[in-house]
Amino acid sequence: MNVEELGQTTVAESAWFKSSYSGAEGGDCVEMVASAEAIHIRDSKDKAGPVLSIGPAGWAAFVAFAARG
Image 1: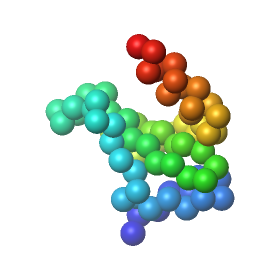
Image 2: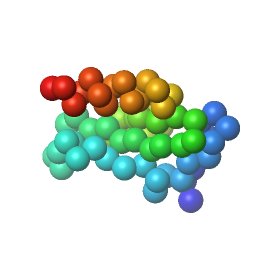
Image 3: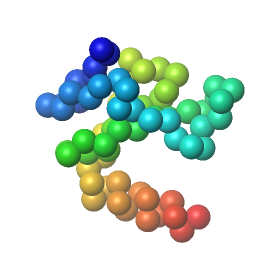
Image 4: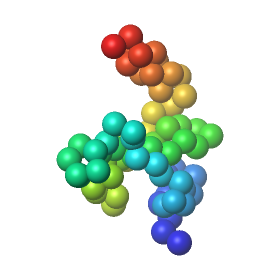
């Protein structure tokens, strides 16, 4: 099984899921996975690349901002 280390959390590769706004043709695609400590976001085309980790309060603020349109 492919796993990725995120801080002290081990995340199975199968736990990541792609945004519903990502197209099937490639292009702009992001994946995310939630852990107890944070929401982790990465480029689905570069699975070995950098991961952006956002704490629960920061994620909630982002979601509220995005929902306003």
